[in-house]
Length: 262
Image (cartoon, rainbow, N blue to C red):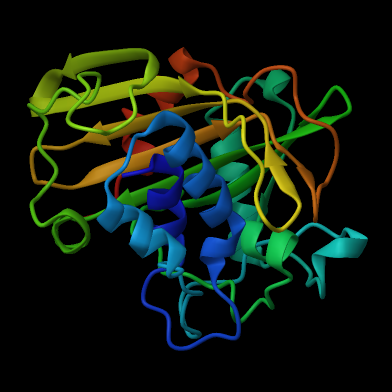
């Protein structure tokens, strides 16, 4: 399954019947990539073509802090919770990563309202963050999926013993893929994705680092460190490199700050 899609799937989970689908952010890009790489089954293609993503139901967690760009639709002042999350994330990273702000990709790209863009959060730092430095804007997307969410999506819990760097069936191979077994029965896999396709909503994503931390209880963290996007809702040029390096992603994902309390 496409890992970009997994992150949006989690961010948009539990929706009612919104006016538009969050899958439009990546659906066309996912279809083109699968055709180019011959990397997905007809069943997966059918799910993507049908618009598998839906907007989050209202009444979830606090509003994110959407950026004020003309094409992003209605904007709102950052909530105290969103500013606090961005501040706690910044405290874990070196100053040279740039200015950090929590945003909503659905609001930026699809013009979703704050109510539509709300989402449940399992981890204390789960969210979508803009990184501004050297005149460019990149993004970090962090999502924790519990065992139940993974089982609903894949039919089984996340398995730390599974080697994600090994190509299975028609799944696309992961470029520059590294897998590391960690203490406590966890496994961290990181890889590069060129994202060299465009979507049907005028959005083109730059290269990124992606990662997955699988935990022994069957849960997993999904992360994207993206150089940014161009087109509808863009906040600035692409970064030359992903906002967080592979080593910084590992330090973040393996730290206690991203784990739920209690």
